[in-house]
Length: 211
Image (tube, rainbow, N blue to C red; front, top):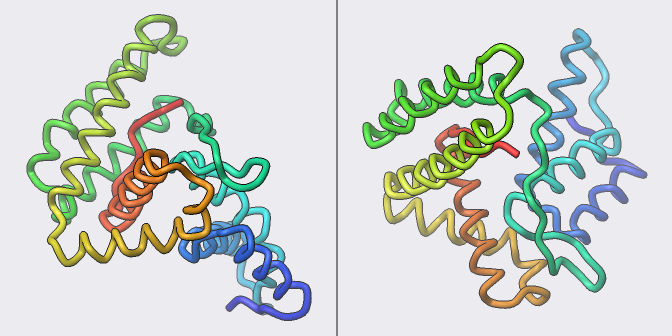
């Protein structure tokens, strides 16, 4: 349960004013609640204002992923992806688990098998004593970026026309607050990134790129 009372209403209103998409807000709330529940059973409902920092963190991640960044006069720029908290081997282990689960449940078609194999190989390469460094590490990161784009194509091609239209409409709604501040080419790129994020969430697929 989440209580929206008093100061909580002001917090939620600020999310709306700042253009935080509904699903991004839910993801931030889920992140806080998951951490809250790890401390043991709780009888009191979570107050939504306690979730504000997590919602803002997820919103920042969303903006970096889509290329939508708040600046003077509105969201007009872009930023590189934020660095991962996990090490490269940890990142690849988690990605491989999610890919394997997606393949086993049918969320990832057999076209994803080469990607799964390539990520498994990358994980083996990353486990060198002392960690992968220098040109070898950079080469692996570039390769992961290519695999990530390949995964996005495979996932998008696997969805049916009705689902695709639904996700495109959802992406347009998510970006509506930013549309007037963005040139057409930048908006088109951001829209592609939002659709990609939605497809991955729908299919429980990981992001393979690592920065």
